[in-house]
Length: 288
Image (cartoon, rainbow, N blue to C red):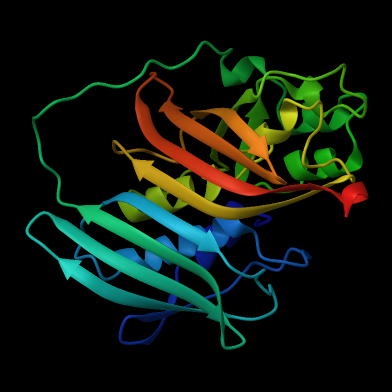
């Protein structure tokens, strides 16, 4: 993650490193590994640089190795196809000569008209009715790791609909679903690629945690070893990442130390703007 929105926007402004090659860095935030959502967002920016202005409609990525925040990331884009309507790209992120992330992305020229429908947004209190960062840090019973997660990073604002499940002693198993309001921590310029990249960045936050809630746990539990393994985003409609978005998440399955979660992202007016899916490691450390 980044400490400020300016840090995050700067990290998404990739440097040129040769034909279809780009250089990215992780903001210095004292983490031992790079936040996966940052690598997804940077890879999307790299691929979009070669897509002639077409907006993304989907991405599918695999986290291969943990990223080193002290080293630059080399993003190499492979131009798989340039069609009349669709552009397909493959992007591989490397550090120390090894691939750490691999992504396929598809870009689609806008086509007005046609069939149009969307699932309705689930009921949720408005973000103004939920605790902000300062109030979340003051809630009784939240472990230090949770306070740090929701309060340290001002690049993105997160307001969970039910913050009580992060208490030290949850009252018991919860339904395998949760909802979180999220937005960039300040205004952004009118750059559709930047807003799509910010959405991809935020979509890696909180999603895997949904797979632990059915068991009365969270990814902040010291007994849980959690790591994202893959990530997918489908961009349905234009979106502004600096406006409130409701991230409705559910987990239909967990087994064999793997948890699977899905997300639907709605704008403030209730329009479905994106969908996500992710599988990750949720290993019990005392079972190692």
